[in-house]
Image 1 (cartoon, rainbow, N blue to C red):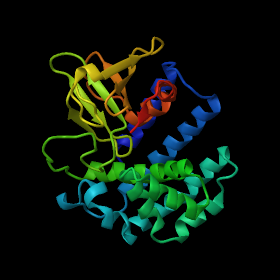
Image 2 (cartoon, rainbow, N blue to C red):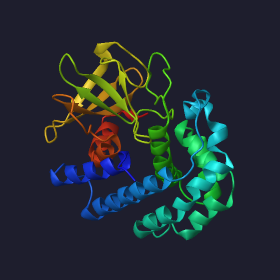
Image 3 (tube, rainbow, N blue to C red):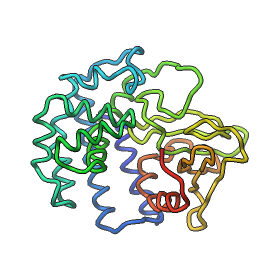
Image 4 (cartoon, rainbow, N blue to C red):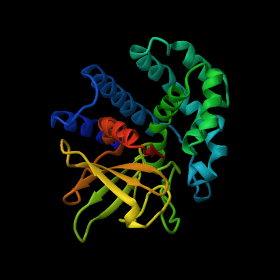
Length: 282
């Protein structure tokens, strides 16, 4: 099976670790994420051999138009085989997240679909309800939902033409999730791209505008950078109080772009800085 984004993501992770990127957690957590990315790479290969339901333009973006298919038995049957291995990996770091959690997710026929839908819609109440049913915390439920849905959404996006939806906004044109990071490419031929940390999509966006509320008043847009890692910065908006982590490039890469999910993992220190400064993540 030919390589896809999940394989590229794993290689990118290894290259960033080898380059001595500032890592805000222990070697044990580096190993945890390495195993997680290896697992998701295997899941992507498995899913490419599955008969995924074909998506039509009327079902995209999934967060707005695809609720029915996300909650379908066909999608559930495709995703369920990946549940035990993910829970087992999490259990290796968290003794309170054990096989019973996976059993609870699998037992309720609509739960996986509801978790994925709530995740894509940033529906915190929906995630909290699912977490309550499973008997875990809301953040844990969101983490599980994201890492169960990421291989499916990635392979689905690779197989699906994305219709032109007109003027792009801060939500992924394919899955509808809020952009997780941005890439800023310098020069006249460059531009600003928003990136989805779930399906891996990338789309062009206005260079000067808040990627959450759309504010274009430059006086209320602040870029915060850290001396220890000049590639990364926080784009903060004084209007809505949100922030977006951004990778700055001197020029567009010939092949592999920065992987938003990996960059997000390896820049947890920026989230701490943003929260300390009084900003919130969208």
